[in-house]
Amino acid sequence: MGRHGTIAGRKAAQDSKRAAMFTKYAKAITVAAKDGGDPDYNAGLRVAIEKAKAISMPNDNIQRAIKKGTGELGGATYEELTFEGYGPGGVAFIVNCLTDNTNRTTSSVRSSFDKQGGNLGTPGCVAYMFSRKGYFLIEKTDAIDEDALMETALEAGADDMVTEEDSFTIYSDPSVYTDVHQALTEAGYELVESDVEFIPSMESTPGENDVPKLKKLVEVLEDNEDVQKVQTNCAIDLYE
Image (cartoon, rainbow, N blue to C red; front, side):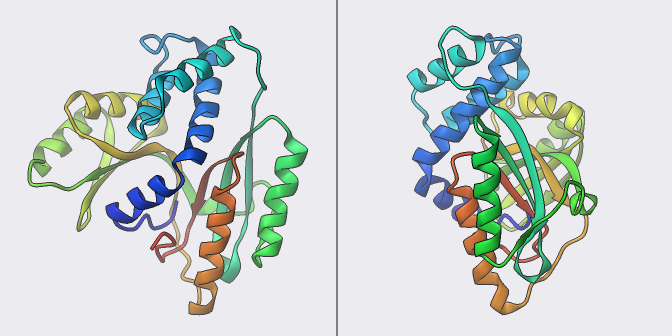
């Protein structure tokens, strides 16, 4: 994840890649639907659908993805892959993928690292620099009472809330992610982003010349339709 930057910057990045995000979210819905196609009884599916709706993904696309997951429609079987490595300047990367062709995805991710001056490593080579946590990003507005938001989050099981200039960031243990997500959405809070991610416990500050290369590596990886998430321990915002 690394530095997320401003709310405006994150929204702009999402808008510019909306079509690609439809594909990524459809895969996530399909995988979640394997545990049951009714979101009322499948919390993971419910969250995946809410994320898709948040980027205005058409309902037909959502229903088709669910039916692929439940087996009502034929389609690819997706496998989860996680890659670890280093980008320029020694910045640690964790890349999560869903793919129907592991050889294609592995080759593509490795090539992206090589071409942008990074190195794909072995499993566990950077994971120790991160902690896996539920993550919720909410835009700060005059209508939001900070104390009330914190109370809602903590009562649902969240561990911490960090107040930034234009946002609130809430963290939780992965085991209560869906509980916190449900509590926040039912209380009327709009989530700009939410997921279970690898949050850096130690950050890396790259040299000035490495920043453009890091931004390019993130861009290339996120343009890959097999890549679901790119997380880094970069102390500098790579989305500005």
